[in-house]
Structure formats: C-alpha cells, structure tokens
Amino acid sequence: MNVNIESFQKPNHLNEKFVIKWSNTYKRLEILEKSGIKTYSIRQKAIQFLKNKCIEYSKEKKCYICKPIKGYNKTYYEMRPKIIHYNGEKIKTFDCTCQFYNKVVKNSHPYLVCSHVLALKLQLKIWNWENVRNRET
Ligand SMILES: [Zn+2]
Image 1 (cartoon, rainbow, N blue to C red):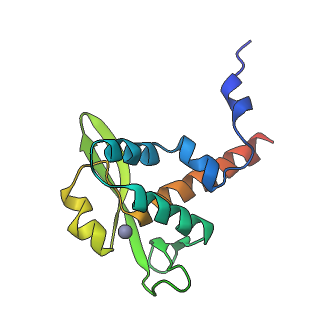
Image 2 (cartoon, rainbow, N blue to C red):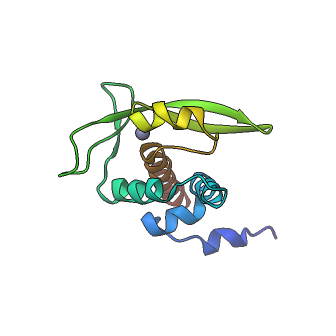
C-alpha cells in the first residue's frame, strides 16, 4: 500500500510561522545570509506584509500587488512573473516595481528577492496549501 506519510505530518493550516519552513525562497535567503548578503530585514518585512494581509491579485492591473502597511508608507508595488535560469535550475519568481528590486536585486545573486516578492511567494504557498487541503477533504 502506497501511503504518503509526509502528508500526515503537514499542518492543516499554514500561518506565517509554518510557511517559512516549507518555502524554498525563504531558505535560499537564509543561505545568502550565511554567505554575507544581508537578508534578515527582508525576511522580517515580508512576515509583516503577510500578517497585515498586504498581498492581493489586482484584476485591474492583471498582476499581484503588495499594499502598504498602515502607518508606514502609501506606495503600492506591482509584481509580475519572471523566470531565472541559474546553475541548471529554473527559478520561478517575480519582478517588482520597488526601488530595492530595481537597484539591488536585479544586479545581485539570483536567490535574492525583495520583501514584496518574498511575501507574495509565501502568500501563494498559503493559498495553494489551503486549496490542496480543501480538495483532499
Ligand atoms: Zn519589491
């Protein structure tokens, strides 16, 4: 009998604490931190975006957006899918309209993402996870 043991160990619901354990994008940022590229504040900010439900799909703009956290700033960032080829690996990621993406991320290590893209990738994982769970039950 072919029983997938791993599926029994997965939590029913992914929150900001659980999702980072299942995210390759997040793990890659931790690896970068060890090699001297600072990613701690990117990761912290992304969790704040998740907690404040900042990620949405905009039908009007036909892309994902990251809304501002109340009290911080008033800028909306737009993110569109993008594929990076690195070491024979095809990485599905997004570009972003923020300054950090355009000044730093684009010219840095392929594993580096801005806090908005990290938040989006974590949010997609949470949404997708819940869809999968709903189909199973
Ligand atoms: Zn960004």
